[in-house]
Image 1: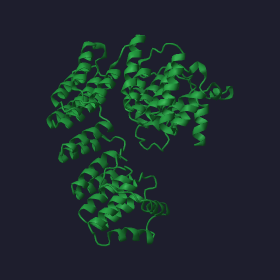
Image 2: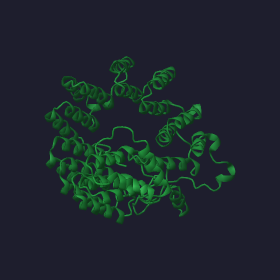
Image 3: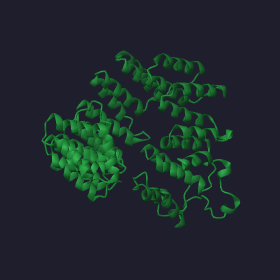
Image 4: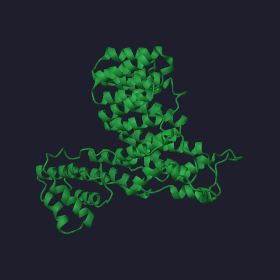
Length: 485
């Protein structure tokens, strides 16, 4: 944490930019000579992208890239940071952001500062983000930086801090950024304060700040929460009349809103509108992901496959796309199809995202298809994918359902012994409860015996003892989902 504080205080401040003695070692940015037509930054991205573990630094790879005589342009590095943020690889995005300044002598823009503040929040939390904001020179504190801090407060649902910061923004002059007002509307929407949401909308009208698709989406979501179909229809009509604010993101929100109020036919119309905007969509991967998710929610399996085939023909599909497709097919009980997409993911040789195998391990275990679940685990291990605690807990759930206490205990033992595993005591306790309720002979005793025999590492031994010691609350049902961890 001490190191993090140093980063938050010093990064990109004028005093931290390299001194004259170090400047002779810098390789300054220049246009890339690339007769072959192969993008240097694409090659750099391919070199660093397989590092999926956020605890493994990518700085040595960046340094090696420069040592090999390669040059990179600052805008290209910024595009990689943006890409990493999109895929929630925040720690690595922050490392590149730091490296850009500390190693590459790039004077930061206000947009850089705003992005860096956001990444500090994602990686280290609100306190360090606030410290970074306070230590940012006034010349670099434009509306965009205030907007970044405001978004942190929105994510924290801190109404008091957000409203205080909003007053500071108003004191700076008339804020013209719709994003600032959108953040406040989103905050009031999340906290259920629809009266203040209406106040923000009124302020935008008074100041002559037009609504954008995001603002329309928030208003539509509020109507959906209130089961107000006419209200949703009204917002959709407003967007159709305002062509400048028609984008796929709004139609995705509209489809979700109609599904929430049980209007599947209208949701399908919104998805057709979304498809009509694919060609001009900036992030078409996102648009395809929305289509697959919502068609599966409606139960239109043929449409899910149609969109998937179009997706493969139009875009390079990353882990997020495979997770969405596999999850959608599992919801449709299409296990054979989900397994087939998993094989496609294996062939794509993307970074080892344990969440993808875990989806199938969880689904197969719930269905009692333990052999299939074990095959998925073996394939993941063969690829060098690091298993998570959840992998083994999912498998343990399947063993417990068929009263195979010995195998269940072995799986739980492996989960406990993962040092970085995000154990959830509810899952372990629910399994103990299952053994007791179903009167599996000596089940709980066998689990406790593992501790007495000291078969766990010291770390696992302590974690299991703490989990059992604190298990005084009513446990959920055995096999409760643990998320993607």
